[in-house]
Image 1 (spheres, rainbow, N blue to C red):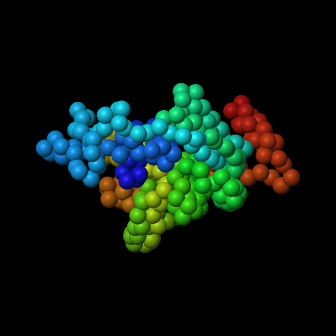
Image 2 (image 1 turned 30 degrees about the vertical axis):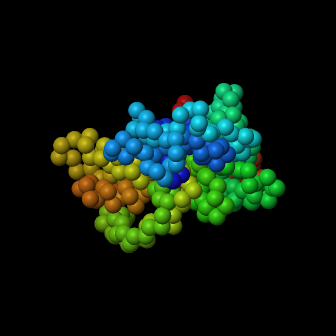
Length: 314
């Protein structure tokens, strides 16, 4: 049922992220920490009545859903709603990670300032995991070892690598995970498995096909709001094909980094391009940032990269 509600939330909010990325956490937090109340709305029957399974006192409202009169509806929340946030404040994607984290914090604070969710305010703690999946899992286990972990309703993280590592753990613990990754496999609540021929181009510009095992082990407790990466890359192929000049014989290549979120949608893009009649070209690997030389701090390396950039522009 929670998954159905989250699907409805995704449909309602489209591709919104940033501060509103925790709208779903609000819903789950209300469901978990508060009494059921009108969160359990069900559609009215065709004859305008409500199913007997809801119990006494429900009526068919103008919204088309069965509701209870406000005076009878429970829904007063007691206590707090505990949320844990994992963010990248000093790792390789800190430029966007900081904004992502600040948006979450600002949103939670705003909800608290307005009285919380049915009277319950968010109690949140954040941790800089530096975009390292191993550190994300280690911090999750540290939180899990705390005596009050049972109160935690949801967690938020940022990257594909850490989300793939954390998703099975939160499923075991029945905690909602709001990942910043929109990898297609993470969108499936159920196990799926496919053997798919994926085309690519070798250095001689000959097409080669390799059968890959694609699918998902199923992540029923992972949620994100927006279009997954695989559908996004298909949309990009559509746009390129639509905008290409008539009669053009250009090839389509993909530029990507080695991080999991960069490589996850590549099979979908290649398969869709071939099915759409778009010729494949060579790919280009572009890393997020250059490696930090031994003995050089990340801050110094970043400063050096900026200086090199200024000299190149000059």
